[in-house]
Image (cartoon, rainbow, N blue to C red; front, top):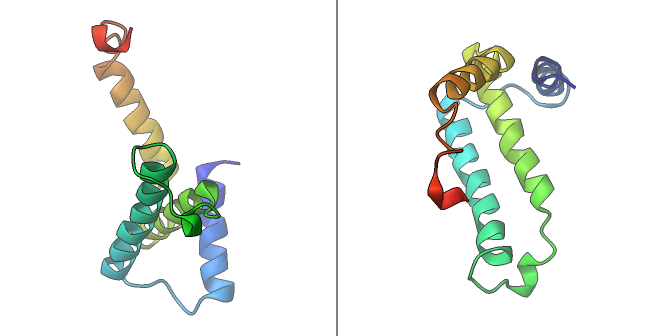
Length: 108
């Protein structure tokens, strides 16, 4: 599935099930909240913090999907073609970091 397709799927969902997009500032706050939920799971499950019993049932995939959903909403409402932007960024990183990581002694 392409990013273009899921951007359209999100827009269709908003049109058919939501009333409208939340404004950009509300969605930015929502994105921050969702990223915080991902951070909480990662910190407790894979980091050094102990995991509370109530956190053990949380699904990392669902939380990452929440982040993606809000990112797609922000892209849609600001007119960003996220697929084009992603591939442009990937090309830029490839050019900039072509051998940077291979030469990083910390990664060996």
